Length: 638
Ligand code: ZN
Image 1 (spheres, rainbow, N blue to C red):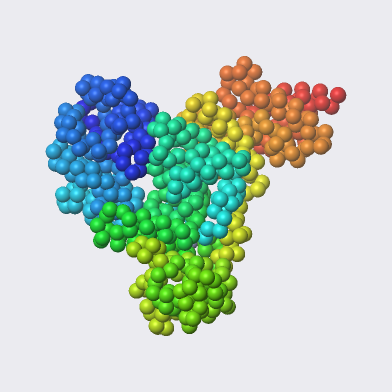
Image 2 (image 1 turned 90 degrees about the vertical axis):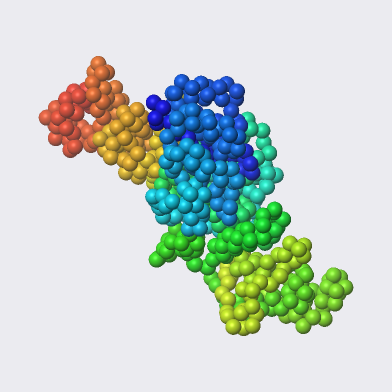
């Protein structure tokens, strides 16, 4: 038994991520899956910890989840030795990278642990670029080349979209409204915003709650449990939320504020659509976000070259936000992959943006920046370009600059969009040392000198007002059935105390709604419906599609308003009553709604006629035929 013991090191609830007990939950899930597993985290109760130690001493434990922070005390190593650990698995292995975006010093201890135990090690991550992969090899495997399994970065079912901030709250509400009833996460840059957005969403009638690292551990746990279990809940959260979230049917992820880097963006949107069904993402960004993220990097404690790397990662994200062609091609290129064709599943593929040659206005803006000694923010510079001689401008003599009033051909809003895009293309950046004043970067030199043109987007402002297009998971005619299937799933999940997706995931329900299986055999052909689930839930869902809800079924609907409708209902009632035979313990058998409809329309007078009704098999006639003849006879004499 001991020989299979395995230690899993995963990010814990401590440190700046503050994700609450992801490892504990993983442990619970493994235990639920029939594996003797336990977790050691700071969120444990004393009894939980004692139970884990007891299981180790008795040699029962197969899997132990623990946070790398535990390795700081030597006790953990001797504990793992005592447990006869045979394998170490490391989750989120990119945290070992000192230059990466999620560096955690305690991850560096894992290499020592491997040497101390002398056992194989497996490392997992979803976001490592080539450099980070190299660091994982060096630090966890002592540089000896392990077997590396790389899967592509592309998640083709995730729709990508960005939008400049206009009225962020309204933009998020509109996005959520178009996806009412779908589970989603709204990431926010501040705790306060998670709370105010959750309140706004609730006011708009959405089930929503907030989550951030400042909450009590117990409250955070409650939100996680609710999100895991409930279908259609929206959580507004800081990045603290999601580390341990393992919910496959998150249908959308929105960013109310710009994430801190392209890696963080990729990781956060990657929480959507893990079941493979269509999922959407929506990221808002504005000049204030850029300033905030720059300041966070500049004011951090990292050494200068690490800060430079962080600015580079933010630049990559800004480039993605301000892109004028397929976003997925850009995103994948960052991770070293090539997508030959535009993806067809991002906002820029949906509606290619209108662009214009922005070389001249960009040069005017750069000139205004240089002539004022790179000492001002966009607001003041735009007033100079527009030629508005306010007090501040007159006091500094800026109304006598050659650039004063040279930008009257554009509106203030257009200039704001231009400055934001210039920041996105890193032609200019706010300088922390100058209180956020805009300074020119090297990239701008060729444009200023007239050696290179630049193309920018024209339609951003208009688009921001029109809002995102409503997207449904299925075609209109299948939507009511999908809702009915989801309602059934919710009822079954609540009865069993399980998260909804454990019954069937969204992708399976979508396929059911689209293909409308009429028998359990057909149901078995749907992806995600294994033998076990077919037995447990097949009949329940089939009855939603063909049976008990006959009045809503299209076959029944075709008879609506005619007196055949009543006959159909009577036949259906007889059919339901005999689904398991006269005694109620025969093999389950049902007719499809279209077969019932044919019986209704043909009204056979005898069993021979019944057999001629298209689609009916001999066993079906044997089970239902006589009862149907009675129903038809009653109906005609009534
Ligand atoms: Zn695209």
